[in-house]
Length: 311
Image (cartoon, rainbow, N blue to C red):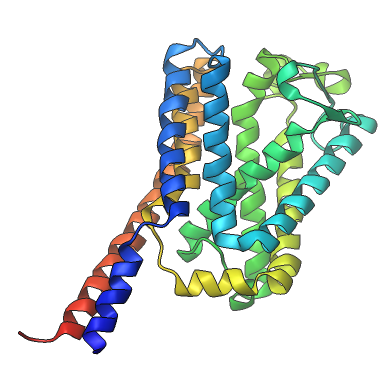
């Protein structure tokens, strides 16, 4: 009876669920389309239909992964708070002369969509989407988990995690600045534009500092407020549900995007920085994830063998 129950549980665990299938497909589509863009388009981006498919794949790979691990309630609160805080940072930065991450102004390209105040709506949404892979990477590397229960850590450890979330997210500033200025997503003005060229190779030096502060503030709220109050179910799922290979989706998203920008960079120096910054952290996180999966699968196989007993 026990062996029969264990076999049935194992069979259910192996059965692919629709969310994992969707994540796997989205990951493959994102990798293929992103590398196509990096190799074939000369930096101009994909045609409209392939770009739409790529964007949908990114939404599924990031937000689908978030919903799987946080649940609707916590994921919605995470998204709302992070997006609103990011928009407030952006608007304050523009209104008060670039005091957070440098004096920039967003363009009015059709791809940017509607603006709220001086900020395209897609900007805070995109920044929030990129924060999730960063959150996953740090948690996998440090704790071997997708979602970490802050109550299992000392307060100083939680704060340290949040500093790392913010700093890793700020790496994306180095990745994004050349692309954004080249294609008119934003331009530097005022004091930032007046900086000497040797001091602004990656844009205003305040850019990554401001991104770090935003990432730190948002993840501090998530860790000390949202997860303790809304994360009971998410933490229970994290403890009870084994990892699957598609749970590496956010890591793959960041790694493949970095590789594509290396293959077709704004300039060679930026390409090298992107490869060795994001290539390193992606490979580090993937190594940790593979070790976790191998250990998990090995433990499961050993447990099944012991429950069946000698023949």
